[in-house]
Length: 86
Image 1 (tube, rainbow, N blue to C red):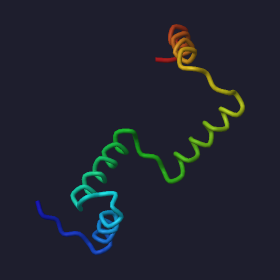
Image 2: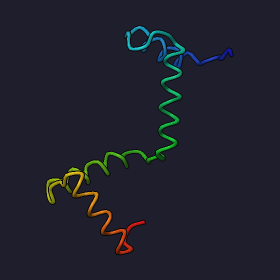
Image 3: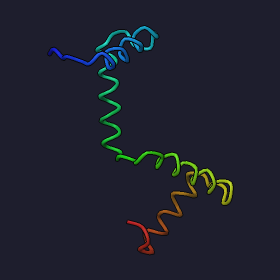
Image 4: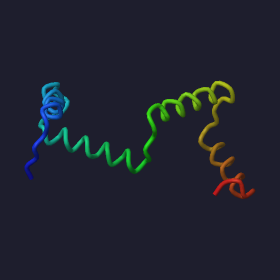
């Protein structure tokens, strides 16, 4: 496959290869496509939405603390049996 890329995109690819993080332009493109696939699979967030959700989660930890995995599993099971969670 052969692609024609605009100079800005080619520069981005070249910078990543020069940084040593990627061995080739193909590696950069593969990484970009895998990231895009993951983003589409997990869902798109509007600009700043994910940051807001992460901040809300961190504030929740400060307010309410955390639970260990076993406790979280038991709480989820109890909510599901009560019909509150699928």
